[in-house]
Image (cartoon, rainbow, N blue to C red; front, side, top):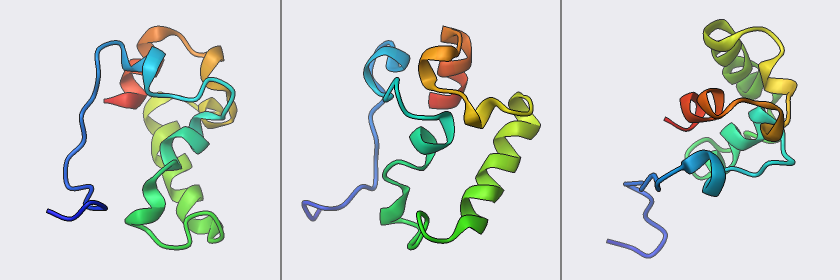
Length: 81
């Protein structure tokens, strides 16, 4: 296994406290580190729009614009998992 291989991930206990950036938007938290799998995620707006659409269909319109600190622990947990 290479040092840069990200084949697995570990979700820590209380991930909404330890694994998110509270001052970043929900969408930015979801897209963080995705650039190693999807090139140009930050420059290609269509990828982020697709992610936004999918999350808002499941969790409600406007959730992607919110900062993580604005969400309940349950909403944060749903996003992490």
